[in-house]
Length: 220
Image (cartoon, rainbow, N blue to C red; front, top):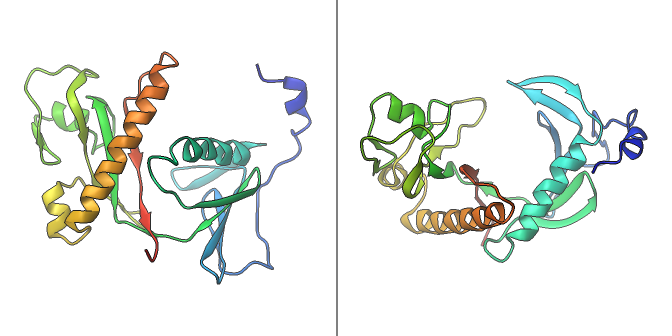
């Protein structure tokens, strides 16, 4: 149970802006303020800003802490499966991490015929497509039905407000988005992470329908 009285003490404590002039290379995102240090570290501060459709709508007390601590839970729960960028958490809203080069492919792992976006397999399936993301789905599947097997549906990672586009593994390599070795590596990581999440969800009476993973690399 959430202690309403304890939360009430934070009603007027809102982190709407995390501009720190003493830190270099400030980049203000929709929710997070980022700083790139000269030694290759990045400081990410999750504010309490609430954004939707590229519009800042409001600021909600403790939202930044919830974001950071939720991410921390999953990074720590999966650290044995996949290396991550985290160095330290000096504050509930803050992560100090390694600066990475983001790979230009998003990895979506799916266990169910579900989704509402234009790139979701349910939307494509209802439009009559059976071949998608380099996978052929059988006829006769129902909305939200469990798939015959876990699948990966990669998309481009759209930067600067662009739209994600469906990809096949062959297209990823042919377009030099990733090498074959990189594709195998991130695919293996994504499937292992999904299996862990599915196991943790099942233990709590839940199902993990699908989720997206993004990867980056450092100088190694």
